[in-house]
Length: 300
Image (cartoon, rainbow, N blue to C red; front, side, top):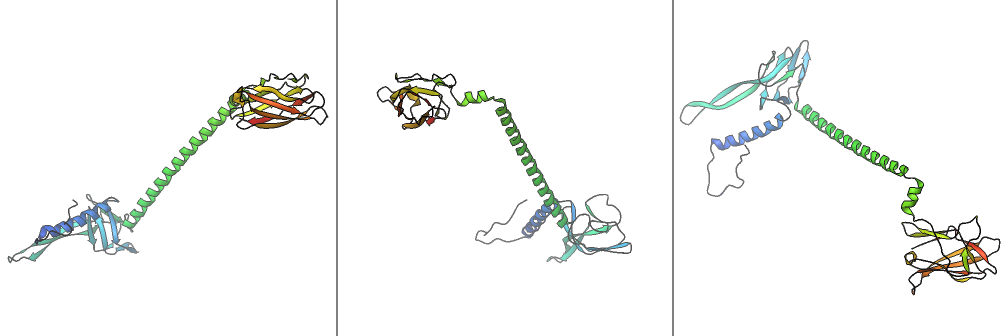
């Protein structure tokens, strides 16, 4: 019903009557009853401890919840199983101011019987009670925890399965790509250079690659193969498009293919006049020699 007195009643004075006291009584009884009924329809709330002697059980007094009511149970000694249920209403009279005795209180106490009740809620003692508030609370909490753990485990299993399937699909996709497909995805094809200066020419050895270049998707330019340079060559050996220009000038060092200690310094830089990328080489060779660019690279 959720009806209650207003906190800090307005000034002016107000009387209290029977309805006000019944309000407090009923609110407490209904709210406590609703909590207990959420667990079961009948249970031992407090007391009602049992002991057995011979073929009889002794149930001590206590408080029980039966038929949506909390009531007192006076105890029992006798055969079992025995069933505790709500007893009949007992009315008590008081002398009123008008001089007449009238009903003022109604009391319901729990009672025990050895036959199964045909109606209403009841607690079975055989010899211990089958429903106890503390045990029901524990069981309810355990059930809730078990359900939560099960749900969590199911969610984890679902997540693990999803991740495993995703990993498997990714692995299958990677495996499905051949080396050639991966190379095509990350690298452009090799482009053979065109010598710019008469002193520079393509390799004349059939067992070596002619000098070529390529760029991958990350912006790294690679070289492979050889270039032949005239003695003491110095100048622009070949050119690349402006899109191959490094952010800052790149410097490489290459060596000739013979046993002679010849080397050449390669400078890769933008030609601001033409907008192309000049690849200039300065060689210290005293004779014509072939220089290898294998393994050389720079970043754009």
